[in-house]
Image (cartoon, rainbow, N blue to C red; front, side):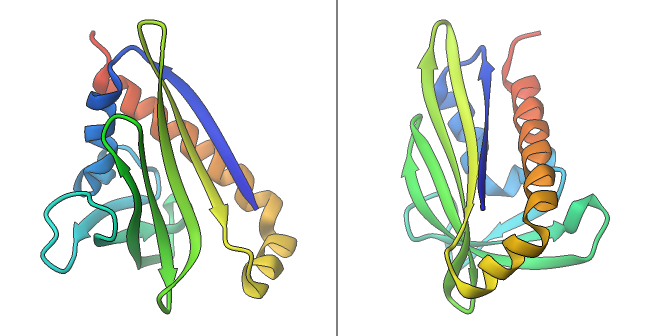
Length: 151
């Protein structure tokens, strides 16, 4: 199970990357994750840094914390992280920033790990969850776009 959304933003990639990689500001943009905190003394993004995100599933609930680990951290180019369950990745979220014309194409994507539990989940709820994820990624990127583009 995987999906992606791309939105063009009239802003430089470094500016957009700075917002996306600041997980403590995720609540400004995400319809589901309303807060996040760096862990283990981390104060910003770096490969291997861990954070936890506070999620309100489907924007309604249930509400729970996820443990995440940064997997890609290249300022102005990409930012990614794994959502962990018992120390293993179950979902990977990734942002790619591609200069385009006078701005940046920002692609947000997700991919569930190929594990027995996620395969069962995908078979049972995959289509519905993918539709929700695509809708929420588009909303997240539109909110980021509104924050970075000049008025």
